[in-house]
Amino acid sequence: MTYWLEILPQLLSGLKLSITIFLITQVVALPLGLALAVLSRGNNPIIKKAISTFTWIMRGTPLLLQLYITMYGIPLLFPMHMDRFFAGAITFIVNYAAYYTEIFRNGLAIIPSGQNQAGQVLGFKKIEIFWYIILPQMFRNTLVPLINEAITLVKDTALLAAIALADMLRNAKEIVGQDLRIDALVMAGLLYLALSYIIVKIGKRLERKFLLEI
Amino acid sequence: MLEIKNLNYSYQKTKVLNNVSFKIEDQEIVGILGPSGSGKTTLLKIMSHLETIKEGSYMIDDLWISKDGIKGDDKSIKLAMSELGVVFQQFNLFPHMSVLENVCLPLKLRTELNQTDIIKQATELLNELGLGERLNSYPHQISGGQQQRTAIARAMVLKPKILIIDEPTSSLDAATSQTVIQLLKQLHQNGLTLIVITHDLVFAKAICQRVIEIEAGIIKADCLADQYFI
Image (cartoon, rainbow over all chains, first blue to last red; front, side, top):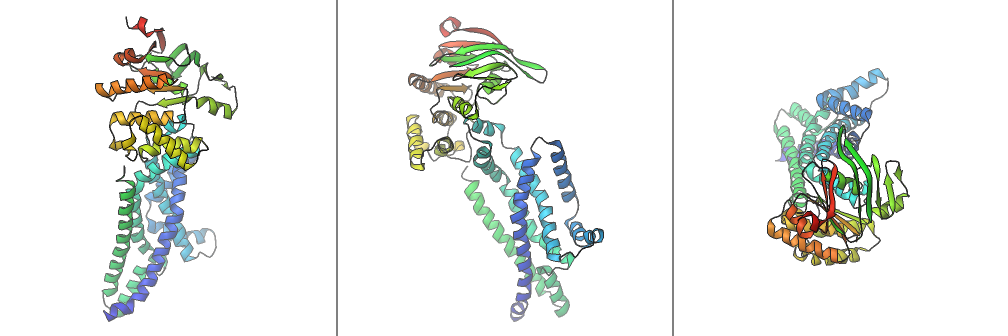
């Protein structure tokens, strides 16, 4: 127990980085994904093609590869200093925005056209129809996959170690290497589980509020 | 008053409406009858401004709408269209809102009323339509007949002069259909013009004063209901 308390601060410092990347990704990638999903349902074929190509590339290649390209590839093409945290955050944002785009696009696609028509005949503006009628239904349709993505994102933050960022898993590995004890890995696993548990709990609460009432 | 003149409409190469013309006077109850695929729904979409006119013209509340545009500014179009309420065949209630919220939303977005008055007006209307006990229910928690009455309340809450109701009996049993007939007659007595789009002849006979029969996009008959249902 004393040993666990000793190594806890180092693990928590890694956890802080994981949570920071998680929050930044959610805050930026969710609205970005929503904007791209809305644009992809417009009438401009060039924009539609560009968005579908973007989501295909980002979802079709490993996140690890994308991290390497941002951290090591881009500075080779355009000589510059690449900040590790910035590289990690931007890669996660872009990658998750692609997934969110597809989730939101599907969430929008399954809303019956009659919902839009009902708003139109009542004389609502397009923005009012989107805000009051379409968006809440899309949120309801995408809640479960969004919660799943949030859990995956927590676990994916372990990949930050690949660009030498001191995330929780990297710190745990270092402790194991120094002390030759497996405890740090077990603790890291428990902390990941705790984070996932919190997300699941929040998700369940949202499901109860938005899914069970209808 | 509502008038359609020489209306032609095609989906891709299929002609759906062929030189359709008719006029509906204030406080009439007109049934637009015809089998599936006859063009009734397209007509509904044009009348409710969900489809753009390609050939011909359409007048509502002295505002003419044609393929060349609408003779009037945005405000007058909005005003003219607010004379019209539409109840869809599938009702198209907002599933994430309660019965009361469904009816409050048009008041919230289309009027200057405060929240208290919005709730008061919507509740009064829902009470009149017998939905006072279901104000906080969600659409999936109420019966088909109650959903339809909610849709009627939502369409009526902005006090339109004309109500278009699409296939009102398609998802109702015989007893509920009778209730709908009584309700529509009551609305008509309060001064409403009713356009009922249906293929249900029994229902049409029970409520309509005049019948426009449409088949393959062409008007086959336009006469008083008494003459039509001999």
